[in-house]
Amino acid sequence: MTTSQHSLAQPTRVCYVISRTDGIRTFVIDMYLPSLPTLVQVFATDTGRVQLTLSAFLIGFGIGHLIYGPLSDRYGRRSPLLVGVLLYVLASGWCALSENIEVMIALRFLQGMTACAGPVIVRAMIRDRFNPEQGAQMLSLVFMVMTLAPLLAPLLGGWILISLGWQAIFWALALIGFICLLVSIWQLDETLTPERRQQGGLFSVVRSWGRLLKHRRYLGYALSSGLIGAVLFAYLSGSPFVFIEVYGIPAEHYGWLFAINVLGVTSGSYLNRRWISRVGIERMYALTTWVAALAGLTLLAVAWLDLGLVILMLPLFLCVGCIGFSSANAASAALADFPDLAGSASALLGMFGFGLGACSGALVGVLHNGTALPMAFVIALCGVGSWLVRRLLIQPVQKTANC
Image 1 (cartoon, rainbow, N blue to C red):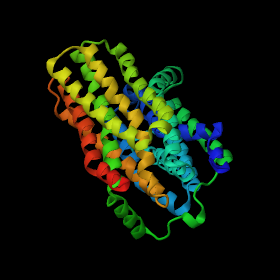
Image 2: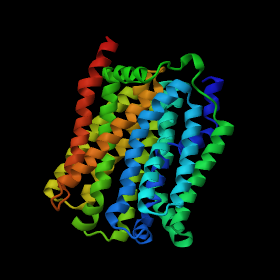
Image 3: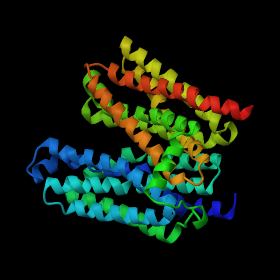
Image 4: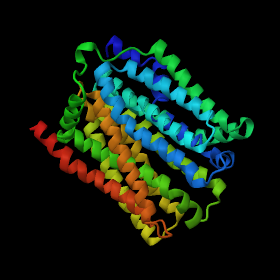
């Protein structure tokens, strides 16, 4: 590893990378959830309009991918990242000053657009500095630490709400962003040299996206990993109903069952970081898709036969745990062939995952029938689909390369 590679691995820089990955999105969403009933009263509105603040954030987060990826390829990684974090800080503080629900919805959209700067650009920065296996190890560390966010954010948000009021939640989110901004200014160097940056305007960006979408291996990893990631969205959408209403778990105990599967993602990321150098990215990813497919089908069978919650939790743990293996490996492998387009490649990768995840969560709701079957079916569909995409798009390319 070169000196520049070691510099990214310094503790302060790793902490920054971790804090600006998808975990920041988790904090922005989950830390805010306890305040929703309060906002209904504060803004004298209905629950539906308050829930639009969540939808606006998610839409903004998705659109932001298409902005920060190309910008980081054109102007370097550091400047767009600093601008994104600064805007995130301002948007978070502005949310605390909202006087009506319409302004809050608009600002949550802006907050989503700016919060995605970290996940998009950090993946590209890791691609700039590390080879695929080292990059997978770094991303595994990122995912392992940040999967703790769903456990901490609602508890922290609830405490802040009771102690300091709903505005303090947004000031706390702004403070987190401000700390990240300071660390990035002092500790984070530019990873994309001027001679490696993309030139041209909008047409160049569209042409780059076309180049990515025509690349069979990249498309395979984007779709396959997106489907495994969509398992989490299906789980988030279906598990409250399945645990509480179908199996009669008290609402106050739901968080413990939720935490078990979150720890599955953490465990997967930890094991992936330890095994990847010995097994290799391609073999590890192939094994992950096999486990996702088989565990998904097992989950569907358990739900169909109604064998109970304890047995249901076993394949569910494996399905969700596969995310810890797939995310880092797929991102590193997908970006490996595009050192000159790492920002755009990272952005499209996020868009695939975000889009497929949104579809899986919605499908669970559409198929709702009062049992655990809808959630199990969608999770199984995602697992089998991921395995099938790898067989059709990735595996043939690997065989050709090995010949």
